[in-house]
Image 1: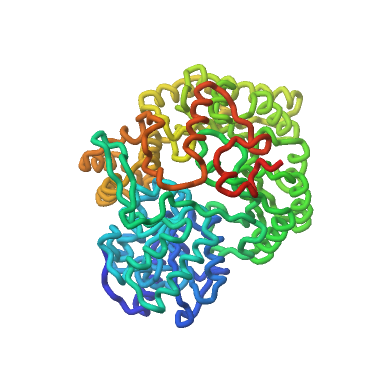
Image 2: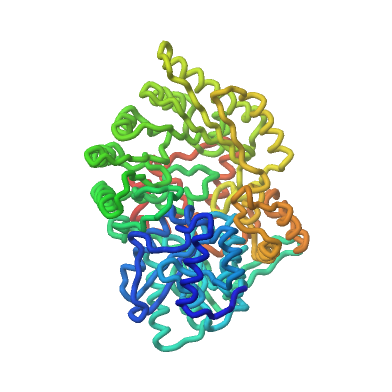
Length: 624
């Protein structure tokens, strides 16, 4: 942990000098177009927004862009960006006593009022500890002083924040545009009057969407299962997530910080909707982001135009869980294509559904850009697609591919999962047969056409059971079984135009452990970090053996969390958190999965998941 107090002028000189020696100096110097610099004397609350991964990954994240602009729109607040330094620059920082700093001011983040992390994936957890340590702070919340910043987290992973509970002062559940400002307003008010950290946390816990883990106690059965979760201090139970009701009226930035270097998604991004109407039983995002809400076409078009004009980007991407589920998708595309075509701007449409793909949509896409198409079939047989409630048929998959091939597309990416509940070898072979049929279809559609060759990329992830899904009760498949099923695919899909890829099982089991874990995993995360584990989602940095050593030292077993079937009556570590999806609904959907019974989309019929009740029945994807 770094503790040296270096004058700001010397610190700035050291940063600039060392950054030039790093692999990518532009990650570490700030000063990009669109970055917000304020006079500290006029600022009441400073917020260090941390993304626990590299600059290139974090700068691509839409949520960070939204909250950065939202907070900085208030003159008395200053939000600055912080990213995890890569190994080369981290070593230089530690050797030269440079604490973790924010890009806008280059000030150490331990001087800020808030340090906030967005938790987008479980394998970033050790990076959080490393960044706190690099900032010169104790990693355990209980060891930090009254004068240290409030350390907070939000994002999808905090739907079960228990493995991280010992490291954070509070968590923000759900959508952050309103609750972030309420939290900072509370802090500003209490800061004027003087306060103890415990007083602030107690007051913050009364804001809907704020979870203060130190106010709750967890007990366990002898076999390790959670017994009870209580709040001796009388804090709210359950803690409800926050939801934005009207996407047209909520803040959305008209500018982005434009990086000096290439980032993962280097383009303007416009959110078109939130939530999902589909109900795929494995998909956590499809449940925790409910209810379904779409923006108006006027809002989307206006935001796209403003972002392109302010940033100079020549590509727009539409962001959502399922873009083609916007009820006016064709009208929206017509409006956007008219603009992008006239301005020579590319339009990217990720998250297209097979069953909502049409000749009209592809015609509009082709007016501005033709690249590969990506479809998530998820399973190779109709039986298994019904189990997971994918609600697409093989005929729809082939029909979609035929439309694409006839329009000149020759590159297709197909996503599948292995190890889904009830999966058999016949289901695995179903992937092989489906890929072969798509291949045959391409050459049938292009019969007699010269110079057109097919490229199929088949990606097979390992199923990871996640909280707040109907499959949260399911056991993850063992490594022996996944290797066996991968071998079936490898031996059966040997073709020069088919590229097959898998996820590393060791990564998948660790993801499952952290996703469904309890507070006791905090000691495992700490031990793994002390053994040098950081950037666990990067193949070149992942040290699975060190993680196994950490589990052994802490007398916990990964299989207990990942590979154990959970009874419906078991109290889960996240059961005190309310994401509006009732447990009775998840149990019902799990039972229907075992019977191969599908549930229609919210637009066809309300499935009674609990969202309508929690939201007062005023808005939901099932409204017609």
